[in-house]
Length: 259
Image: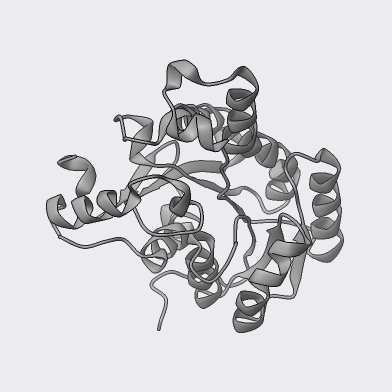
């Protein structure tokens, strides 16, 4: 399929690929189709085995371990990107985690350690990633950072629990970093997809009901796909969006306007 945007000559970092159905898989596909050279990261050796088919299909050879709870792995990824490419044009943050009890339980019952862990992996990791790649983006004369959020940041979604707080903070971080990095020509945006079945979503109780409601109530009566998210992401990291920053951009068939 011919891409609607041009990423020829651009080098991008994509995090969060877990398997063929991941949001980040759709993002990687769209960016490769648009001409980008990609570096991807995986959390551990088990994850690497699951993403191998994606890497082979897309011809991605630069795949490095990066566990955001281990700061040294971010430094190692930085060094490899700098040594191999010398720059970076964009980076995609797509990772989140919360303990099951904190995800499904009441927010008022969230444990202190569970809340801290959820915020660290789901929100502060975007800040750490931005700090890591900032010098590489500067070498390109600027660039684009994109993270993935969800409607639970601004509306109460059943069984989304503490993750709703994490996504609200993530969107605030997007705005603040857009303000701080704008003078360096670095754009920061968040994408808010509608519900779709991924490995992460499978851990949310009643998620099938969320998807059914999205089809029934959205103006276009359709579910979003990883390819839809990938298309928007490719646009946001392209030069076509050079003055778009600090926003939360929905791709959900219009569900957010009626939910």
